[in-house]
Length: 363
Length: 274
Image (cartoon, rainbow over all chains, first blue to last red; front, side):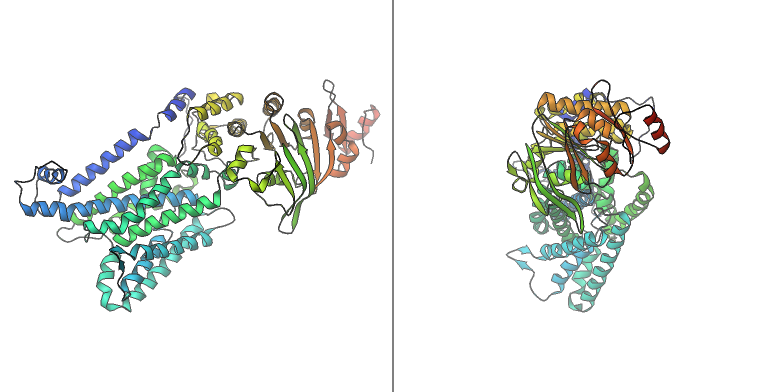
């Protein structure tokens, strides 16, 4: 973002800069973001083919709170539709959106490249390949109710990110051109391997295909356990490192001289971001560009400080994917279109714009 | 405070430092001088463990460098790098606060003590009034002072400066080095500065070490080290060395062939005859 030093611009006084820092400007922003997230969730829960009034939707959701009974007079079918069909879907979309945005922001910080995104660098495809391998295998892929699909996806994601990093690295930097090229190559290899596995396992091709196309039409509350055990610790670790990620935006030597163990931090955070992305992919298939658009929007609005960029990306990523999923199931109603089409439709032009603006990069 | 013994560092087959030994005490400002590629920056990189030595050791206050964690090391030694990359969108305050990184745990964020340290550092470097500005809007001199402020905010006993005055005009050169010297004399920090400009190094440093091709070729007070003979052999050019009229410290200028005759005619002292 280029700033024009016009004489009219009001200079923030040092005292004001200090006060802003002490006030930790994150909280009001987070409140705005959470408001947007909640609004998107309510909207998505209230809209659907079954004509359920918005106030009834709200009452059904609120009545789940202990001691609140507002929905007793409403038809059971309404309650089932809101609570068992729409809401799991909304929550899952929100969770996956938050996860993808967080992992995108983390890749951007670690690679110090604003175009890193789980989809573009091939991590999503790598995770998809790992997940497919487990889904098509004749073995049962749950152990004690916990699915192995996210773990297999994690293996694929880690392989992809390691490859992307090794291929794209030039000296101590990861230039955009090599990163995107490596991502394209890794994605092509992984998706062709995925197709190969599917064709050779035609008995499960339907399950795999519905999954790969992505989306949330199969969401149910139980599926949250596919994601949460992986996403929560990963997100926790990443959020702890906001301040260190800021320091990492300098060159690595400076970060090292400021006391950051650069190699260890990079390894830990790439691992966490890949785990989170893999868990998201394993429930929703490959959904592109969320990890690119959302952190960039946050950066443009609130600046590059990762301490607020990471949590803000999460809440807005959640809101964004909830709305994208709402569009996916309503624009062509009664049939659905894959949500990845909606995100790509928003994201690809944005990606081209960023590529074009690279000379005046945000960081 | 800092003890370097027989330090040998190589990048692949290229040996950058050969058996370098030096020591530095609190309150002292040591100037490291020498031509391009003589190993000045490598010495600073080795002290901050960016390169691993092939031989010899470095001790900070008696502790072996390898026994310190990266964070402990950063609480001992702060660096002002030569041309640090600083994203344009970061504010001066954000950059200076990064100096507090080694003092903060993962779960901590900057508290009042950190802000106080940063405020003091910004005031000392005369950049307090810039705190809210973005790095992209600063002049070269202002940038350099912010980097010095960041190193001061680190509150380390040892300060390492890699060409802190390169790319600065004379006024800013003097301001930065005055500050560094005052930090050493007044606050008892130990300073090690790689300085290109021999006259500047001579005016500000208590002692000089001259490196050439990775070896120490001269060490001592500026008057001892900056002899025309040594300078001519190290830099491969004729130089004149004068005494500063007020401080008595040596002033060094290169000499063109034409001017050499004129200087000799006026009986200038210390001219080297090849």
